[in-house]
Image (tube, rainbow, N blue to C red):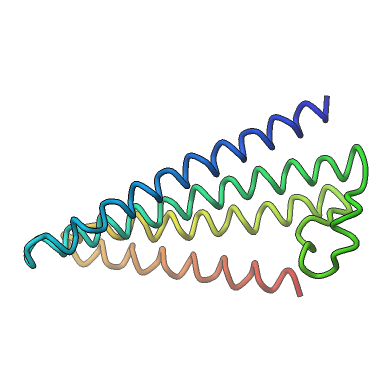
Length: 155
């Protein structure tokens, strides 16, 4: 049963990598629209391009989560990944020793997705009152604290 989960996660990860890469190619093909646009339209196009770029980062991060999950399940329940252990520091993310280790690695990547999504949403926000700015500032504070405590947990 675990092997089915591993294969399904690997296939979903591959699919998401391909879909996101296709979106990036589409974004790059529309880059000339920005340069050809009148100066007054460039601000809107720039915000849209940055939002699509952030969306692509989200796609790649989610594909990475699926990959880490699949390889972590494989290593925990089926067999060690010898290549990950031999390659030293570069493949340290692939070495999973327990379920807590897998959860910790996944939590860090999910936190990065939340940070990127927060940034993506903030690009299209419009502030109508001072309270909106206060809420936005509190959101930034919470994201900063999450990143701070997330980095402290690894030390």
